[in-house]
Amino acid sequence: MAKPAEVTDAEWDQEVLKNQLPVLVDFWAPWCGPCRMVAPIVEELADEYSGKVIFYKINTDDNVQTASKYGIRSIPTLLVFKDGQIVDQLIGFRPKSDLKRSLEKALS
Image (cartoon, rainbow, N blue to C red; front, side, top):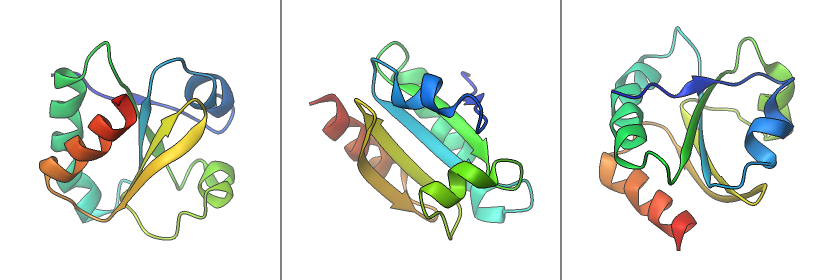
């Protein structure tokens, strides 16, 4: 199973905003129960969309600058980027079908 790579404040622009492919970023923290529930779904999708969408996780405790920049107040928050712009946002635990819908929107 593909694990989303960790991204940091320092890598954010290069890895997320300048990426040629759509990017899903999972804003999470180790103490967050719903974050642990959504993680296996994100890993499944990383496998399914391999080569089409890039998947990252960002720990909001360790990367306050990026979390603050995007106004992340509740986790998990999943942001989908295309060409450096947010094209969708999902807050809280959501079913796999909701995440797939967001990814398909970014790919269309």
